[in-house]
Length: 516
Image 1 (cartoon, one colour):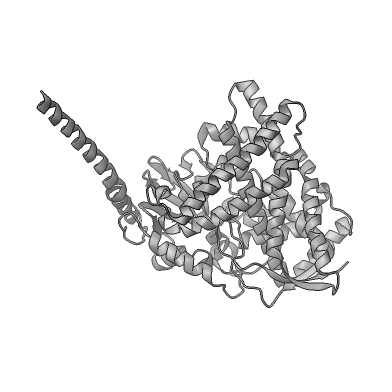
Image 2: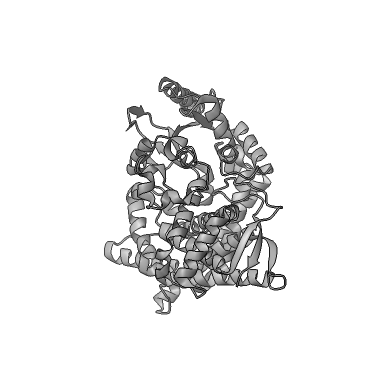
């Protein structure tokens, strides 16, 4: 009897080992090779699949090398910003793919196919898991289906125009603080050399701290600092991001990353709990993103019985920070670089701002009259998109154009390639020409369709905070131009290299002159 039981136990163990062994082997070899065969049959080309790692070792090496050095000043920098992708596309053509570990990612550059993908979020979903993204942010950016619909409904009120008008006071206050610091720097001689990037980066963090957390914005600064460090740590772990179980590998970066994640959760939970108690006691306010979000969430729970959990509110607050600060600071700083290179547009923008506001305080309603500045910001978004690539994936066999894409395929929508495509924008594609947008975005892109320019994504999942970002960028540039002129310093190093967004790797050293 005991012998029989022992044999049964051994048989069960063997079955389990074989079953899991097959799953691992399928994940690490058979499935990738099957997807590779499909890609090549469809006319896509790329490196042959390498067991488990794919292209990640070469990818990480080229990214590390790319970050180390600046490039000559040019708006044509896609080969620098995406060195490995550029290498693959140059080698294999537009219809190419790379390996993120055992997962193939095919490039989609046809605006019509991109429009189809972004118009069908239930068929072309965010890749899950996606180690780089999931390590830093969550919330509305990564949720799908019914959960996304519920979260979007709850969060929507925070970005209504009326609430943006209320938050504009916080934006103006933060801008004024930064401008005052620059006035002190130029007080003696009238001009000075300054790296404006830390100021603008801190400004964006200050704005999102104040608009998201109101009176708790000092605590909010801790979130800003932690998330910046998390992004740096991710790059230290880039080569192993797509390895299974990589979070258990006890490297210094991995250990610090886990500690930061816990601290971030603790800080956010403390802020949210304080606000919830204040609201429940009749003392809370609803004039910031957190207050509006909690009020909307309470309403959802009252009406439908289920709202967002504490963990989900925390994830949305993390998203406020990374999406709300990094993307806007990138837009502002690259606008200053472009206006430093193209003084005629700096002068035109300043003249318009002085016509609309004079030297007086800005107001939200007046921003819509800044037509030239809007053209400039759109051209900067085209040349220097804060997010240079969107990713989608198939979970089942899905039709796209004339292809039937198998499940498990990642799709790279490389907006930076589209924004710098000569066939779409003409031979002057890499020149700074805001007049492209003189008749608005729709007229600028009508020949090639709306997804030839989609800095805030497109379709049902278009960025909920785009009006907030544009209002902050307009207000900041307008306030700077009211008081200063600026040009590139000789010590400026051009290095638009993507991290999560695309910050200047070596800062932005400018000569600023007080003109008031």
